[in-house]
Image 1 (cartoon, rainbow, N blue to C red):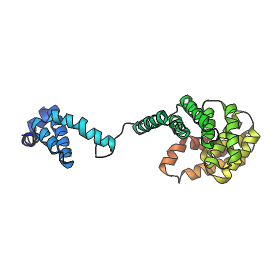
Image 2 (image 1 turned 180 degrees about the vertical axis):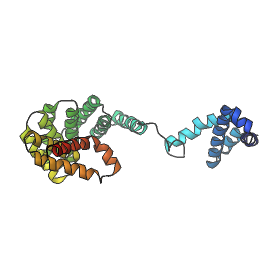
Image 3 (image 1 turned 180 degrees about the horizontal axis):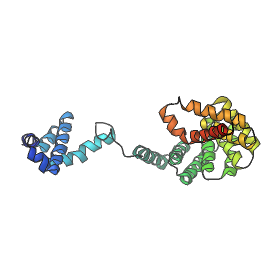
Image 4 (image 1 turned 135 degrees about the horizontal axis):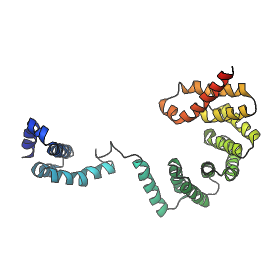
Length: 265
């Protein structure tokens, strides 16, 4: 029987040292056997005990994986390949778009594509969302940010301005930051500075403080720039780990500004 052979093999040093493949197969079979017992899959447990590896593999693909995917059992719920959750979410949204074709589903798909750096595909999905709901501020703002990533600030500017005209605090300052970046890219430093000042009046984003500081340096206002850069560095020391990881590129730029100022002192 399976259990007797398994226990006998595990207690035999020659078996452990001389047949790692067999040990691996026995270990896999034992794993599936125990899982079948926990699920009260008695027939499968008997099959695994009698036919070992072959039945264990059948159980893995027909029961274990399927229950894991459905969320109804242990399965693979504790392990995912990188990006697997996003890909599954994208498949789900695309299926809804095929069946219902709602503006919000196009927007959700676009946001996922944007997050994965697929900006051209994201742009197409944002425009599909706006074709169905032209006044959605989220779709307008996110399309504007997408166009910025594609190096098209002139197209992004009117979209971002239209959103802020309706909601000055849209997306917790992120829409205003995107507009400030668009204005900087278009050479309108004065208007950009006004937006950075507004963002930094209400928020403490390193992204805003650093770019604000860099514009101030270009205008010869080094002391104000240093103060902003120091605030960014100081706040980063007390920020949670995930936030520090997310903002590390901005903090490097802030430290560079601080070191430049210290060098001149």
